[in-house]
Amino acid sequence: MCRLRIQELVRKEFIQIFRDKRNRPILIVAPLIQILIFGYVVNFDIDHIRVALLDQSRTVESRKIVEAFSANRLFQIDNLVRDSREMEATLVRGKADIGLKIGPDAARKIRRGETAEIQILADGTVSNMTAIRVAYVMTVMERLNRQFLQEKYPARMTYGRIDGRLRTWYNPNLYSRHFFVPGIVAFVVMLISLLFTSMAVIKEKEGGTMEQLIVTPMKPYELIMGKTIPYIVISLSQMVGVLVFAIYLFDLPVRGSLPLFFLAICLFLLSTLGIGLFISTISATQQQAMMTTFFFIQPSFLLSGFVFPIANMPTAVQWLTYLNPFRYILAIIRGIFLKGVGMNVLWPQYVALTVLGLAVFTAAVLRFHKRLD
Image (cartoon, rainbow, N blue to C red; front, side, top):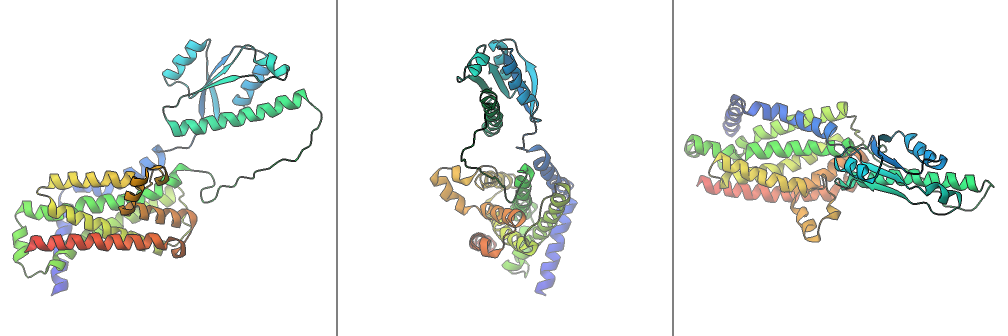
């Protein structure tokens, strides 16, 4: 009898969810749009750097400097400016990322073995991208220094040196999509489970059917199970769909255990469903529940390390992130997909997800139980 009551309530929830035409785009289209945006649009990879050039020297040496940049596929010298004012205007209008100014006495200083200053102007409006662009510029400048030194002193010089061999693990090509896309899998689960669960109880109150559910022989835990099971099924289904897209569309590597990943998502759902139920019990209307949900989602997103490293945050904020379940699921997903690690490494994150999930869900159940009395 208990199983039948839960089954009928689950069936009712599915009918209500898919009957509303406004829910269908959220359930089907929204997750795909998110993964496409974060996979293609949100991209920190630098494919080209637009350069504005002011050559006041116009000598063999300055041409070598220009050729060193133009020979590199990353640099595109699109703007040849005539003076400093035009250089400034080009950077202000956003037509160039880097301004390169070669002074009139650069060649003379190079020939005399002196230090020749070349001004590099960088658009710092997007600071993280600017730092990468400047690093590329300095790499080319270092190569030029060695070339000019060898031309001036052609004798072979041997000396001991440190040869740093760089090898990037887990994301060898430093693709941004391999950094962002795994987090979208968890974000979709959090968004859908929170958004719909937070309105699960309030819809019954606004529809006038909550009293009917209370007077039925259903026990409180049966009502909670009947309300949460549909959203568990929907969240897991969307997770599978987004995961398939991520693997086959963006070549996301899967180096770890998928069962461990599935376990982590289930533990994460325990927290998000609990938070959604709690929001539903304290809200008076669906609009209030939706606003409260988005008020919770934004801090969770920002304090998870999804975009901004937690280590760069103030100490007080870093302590606050320990209460964020999205932080732990993000570490688990990136560890499983990119690093291929298992429970021996990720067990602290699993423990934290379990503790947070049980605490939040228990609080939601107690609050829900009081509303039924």
